Picture 1 (tube, helix red, strand yellow):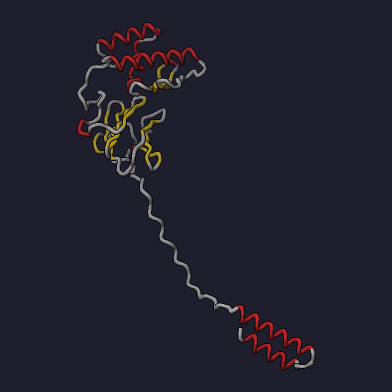
Picture 2: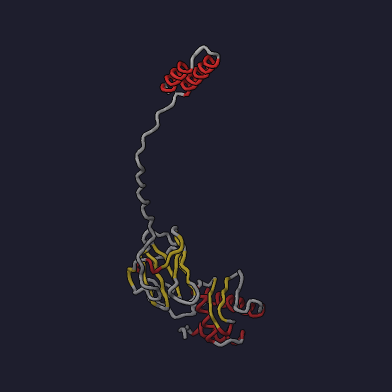
Amino acid sequence: MQSLTNTGQRIVNELSNRYNLSTDAVVHMLVAVNNGSGSMAQFNCPELGGGGQWMRGGMTMVGDMFNQGLQATVNNLCNDLSNALANNEMFPTIPAGTPGSNQWWPSELGAPFSSGGQNNTRYAVFNGRLAVEVNGQVTVYDTLDNQIGGVSQQQGGNDSLTFSSQFGTIPVSSLPIVSGNGAGNKPQQPNNNFVEPAPAPMSEPAFTPAPAVNNGASDETFALINKLSELNKAGILTDEEYGKKKSELLARL
């Protein structure tokens, strides 16, 4: 069970009695809300209908989606836990850089640009680095030329961590590991987040251009042939003379 301060244990006991839930269920929800920075939670608690999501001021989703009473219980409980986290020290202070602390990533990384978490996974994005904590084990990745917008985890396993960047949705396991052992990820795969060079254009067979045709000259030639044809029909030119002149004119084209 998660370690709590005396104040944290007292608040958990009070909420357990108020909502008629076991302390384990309340602690489970407390950890989920804490992982969501007090504003959201993803949980899987049998006493609260199994898997579900909560967002402060937003929609509450539970396994039994038509059970409005259960939705109200989850929403009220998460709001109370969020307020408790904001106003009380619920967990013992753990040194920065230690798994389980609020600053769970290696201290030399400094302050993250963004961070978040869901289920048993937390992430923090730094300049050129991505830190991921899965089941208390921290792995730091080199983000290469990716501009990371967020990390997500599909339901049903820890080997489905992905992040969004300008290249689309990419598996976290495709990034080089800087420290840690990549717990919860599939074996590292080569990074393919680069545009491949375009194939070289295929050479086209050489061809000899056709000689340009002077349309004006061809029109004049055909006009002369028509006149010769008329003279031949009129008996002025013999067939032999007409054929000879016609061949001479066509040869000029």
